[in-house]
Image (tube, rainbow over all chains, first blue to last red; front, side, top):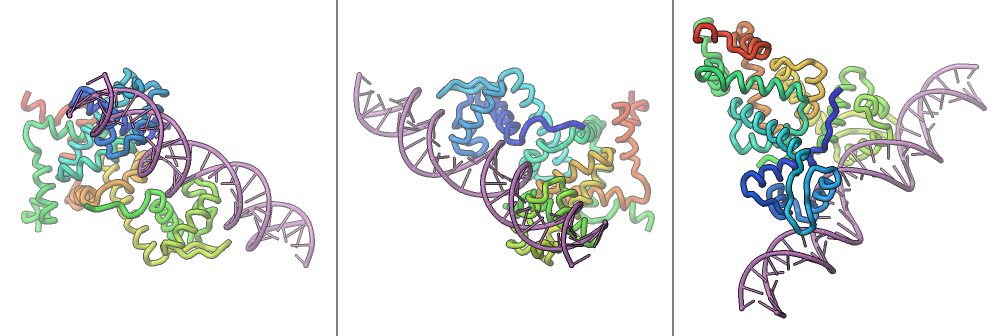
Length: 153
Length: 153
DNA sequence: TAAAAATGTTAGGTTAACCGAAAAATTTAA
DNA sequence: TTAAATTTTTCGGTTAACCTAACATTTTTA
């Protein structure tokens, strides 16, 4: 029904450009290469592709910038990323692992699934205080037991 | 730290063989092809690779079966799949979408993340009844409001 | 049981996304 | 301001995983 529009790789590049632009200002081939841990020739190749698709502006040997269209995609991906990081932290996944896994999940999940995850994060974050069930969940992780078990057993 | 051992594709094939074996008994090239929606030559090619790696037994024009090593991998993937399906259903994601997304996630998530998800599913499933917070979450999805909001506002 | 149908394999091709080595352009610094 | 260093691109490869067309084998059935 809803088909994926762009490859994981295209999304990664646009997201990388977006982050670098936000954090450092200028975006150059080597920045992207080190951010994504790829070699410069791979970056040049992809920049060509992204230019032709209208996602970025890039003059030879010059700077890279997102077009409005590229920005739209990048923001979408970055938003999914943020949601996923928040979700994984709810689960108690460590930051480093959360980063890695969010980077994978952000390319594969259906909009509807993303929407449910976003709601879950919002559900917890807009609660007046840390919800009881979350505390119980963490307790359950440690002990394998439900908090109220003693009452019932 | 923990590197991924097999490609998504290898995992998909082993999982497919596992499912077909369980549901239909015999596993043939065409079964795998239709299960994975690939063409028979692609399947033959991969079966060769899986044989060489020691994951399956396969004689030309004959049946396919998992070796103990292949079974181990397939069971691991299938277990992740099951956990993910349960998790997505908790979230209220429809069956069809859950299937699609579980098939993607099962190849990319870190063990630790999987472990947390498994715990969450277990936390809910071993609770004496449907937890209140889940009901509240569903309510929140529909209305964007917390159940107890009325009391507080 | 031999011809037809179905299934499986081989051979050759495509594509995306990476790579290294070498060339070209730009930047730095002597 | 030119030579050295750095950065970027070009060029030619590689690999994984798919494909189609053609061929081989097995199974079905007349």
